[in-house]
Amino acid sequence: RRQMPHKIYYFDLYGRAEAARMMYSHAKVEFEDIRLTKEQFAEMKEAGKFEFGQLPLLETDDGKSLSQSVAINRYVARTNGYYPEDPVEQWANDSAVDALGDLAMNAMKIHFAPNEEAKTAAIENYMGKAMPAFLEKFDKRAEGKKFMGGDKMMFADFCTAAFFCSPGMAQAADLIAKYPAFAAMVEAYKAELADYLANRPKCAF
Image (cartoon, rainbow, N blue to C red; front, side, top):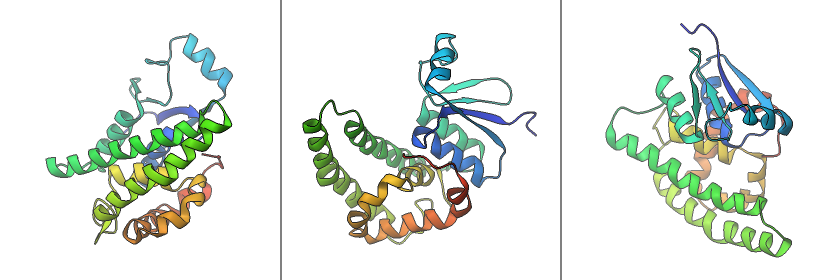
């Protein structure tokens, strides 16, 4: 039994910490959701709190500080029964999360575009190329399944849910609907995580 709850340090956003929050909540494991201001982050970074100078950070009950979001998510999945034992299923989960990371990088180009022209180009690339290519592949993976993990949400499911259950996805609803198997899986995520989604703090993304 854990002596103290694990602590997730991140900004007041969903972003790269949301999959871990979802897994702990779904597993009914207590954790501290520590949301830092930019000023608090800068102070803690200066003090050497963050190994790579980035968030999120997961602090375990025995005082270990774990960095890098995908590795954190995989750790949380493994320690809460959401990571498969079969090597092929591990590959399926890991490759899905890698593909999701590629999609997220395209989304980030919109947020960090230096000017309106670059932002418009980034949106066109994201909605016109990157997102449809992702949805086409994930629609095939979703065929005949409730979740990617079958009847139970697994590592890749939580990472996908964290991305596709964000408020910004409302803008992509019509596009997602063109891929019915994946669209149904996203609805299954929303149903499975309904309590969490209804009660989590409201963030833009």
